[in-house]
Length: 142
Image 1 (tube, rainbow, N blue to C red):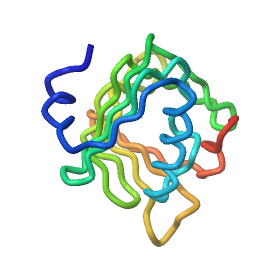
Image 2: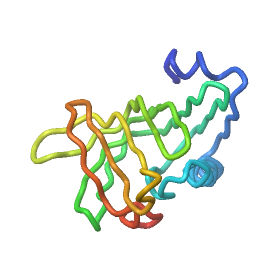
Image 3: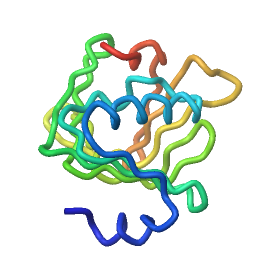
């Protein structure tokens, strides 16, 4: 069941259903934005949607998923609903993604690639903390 936020952006959006189609489209989507293609290592995706007019995107999956990006030893949790507003090189106002720092789960609010350094990805949390990593750590299969 999608949230009211997703429903409010559904009209006029491109919506893809089914795990294989969603995986394919989410990778293409990240590529279009100039972001690493492996940022969403999700399974059992039910729906991917993108409203170009509002810049709003969402992913619905059957169950919450945790993934560890091995190259940077960072564990990330993806809720059953992940939403964000996007623009070239940036995902902002993110909901549904948390990163583990020591023993705390912190909500991720923004991901971006600086044009001056396209091989680096910066992640910002709701607490104001940010960290920058090599983009290669987020390629498909990492």
